[in-house]
Image 1 (tube, helix red, strand yellow):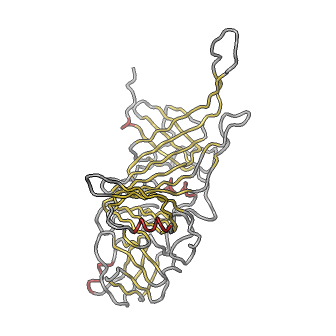
Image 2 (cartoon, one colour):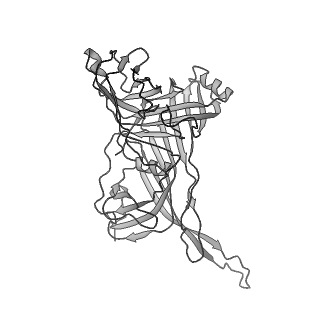
Image 3 (cartoon, helix red, strand yellow):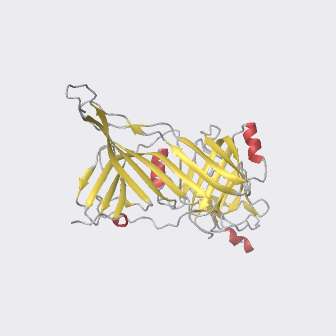
Length: 408
């Protein structure tokens, strides 16, 4: 008798395919850390509903097969960015460091770095990006170096923001040769040049030598939750075309080990609306929805030839203790806002992080609460493409921008 399989002994791995119908196996795959990862094959059925003289059930017939997958985990830099890139249809990419030269003045008042050459926007910097200054040499201004600085407002000449470790900008006159380098990599939903990625997933049960391989998978929804305390989480819905290969040996041989980055925590993050800090945020949630489904079966094959894909939709909500009517007034006026949130791993100057920026957001509802506790309000929102954004502007022309400090 073979003992049943144990979850702790399952190796869950993934790999990016070169195209549809080409499963990714062998080398070049990655183990995925997780809380749970459940993939299954399902089959459509239709009852034979004819009436016969024997007055008994006539059984059923089988139709299209499909794969459904659900991955749940704690959000950490460098772990899930490939899936986010596939959902947004654009790979993560590095931003060219901005060599500001000797023209930058640092000011503690307002948390600003002013560039006399007015090159921030032309250099590709955007609101919501996190980067690190290097080169400050005057007196205590060296404290401005090598710290995560989050841009909360930006013009061609003035960068406003905060250091994520809570320290303040140190005053410094222009004259030092300085550079601002965006950390990790960034993606957004593009207007052109969309990618079309397919992934293969394998559940390898090492204790009973059983493998299940699910190819031709796309990402339907990616949902992130950032609580005020505790680990941020991520939940990913996967849709495959129904083929599954069962085996007795590991198909993704020698996959790269899972990431070891720390989990990001809401307690160390912050949220800004229109460049202003939102106080007392209790929770934040965000969902990227692609509306992915199998196209459907055709004569001669029970496997769908591809996926239906919808447009990129982004929605979410946030709750905060009620101490002002700012958000209520925005909701009443039906004005659009910019919304940026960053969640970091720890309190160090170079902590890992994941950040989200949306340049055009509408608050769609307001939900007050009541009771023998501090009053809070929950606001639901929907993002849309920021048509006023673009190159050499403070925001990109996109529905969402995402930065991962450990993306490579």
